[in-house]
Image (cartoon, rainbow, N blue to C red; front, side):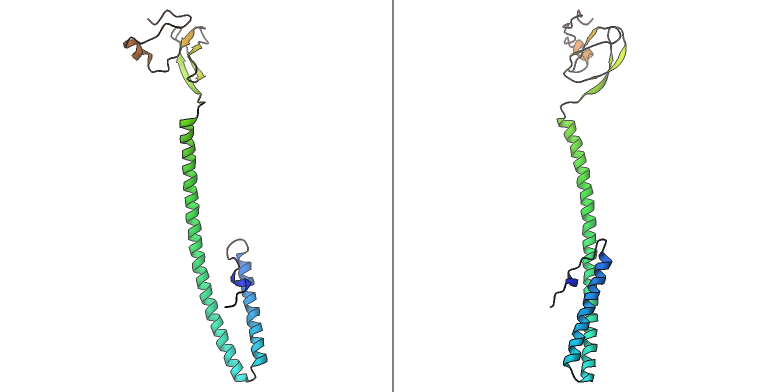
Length: 174
């Protein structure tokens, strides 16, 4: 089977129709060369006409079958591309979720805003602090407020584990 450049041309992409046209032009040139060769080598006109007609019919049939095969393969390829695009979207969604999980678990510098109520003057204020802070100064009254990261201070007081009274200004919780 002769292999020409028209058998390997791409069908998709911005030049798909142009490349298909080139394939057909190449096929037409080969057919014309083939028929010219027949004209030169077959002297009987009736026999020449018969061979040309049968060859033309065979080529038309083969071209039709090749076109069907190419369409089938193109449909399969497009379905595969669509599935790959869906898989890529799912992978990207999973990566985004994994990034969020990673940030939640391993992000060491997580500063958060807390609303703090001063136990001395009852002034409420927001502060951006993390677990490294043990105390903070009230912007209203200036007293230092001990921060308890171990849970609810009322629970600790009920168990006798409340305020340790270690603040520089404190005599212990009442």
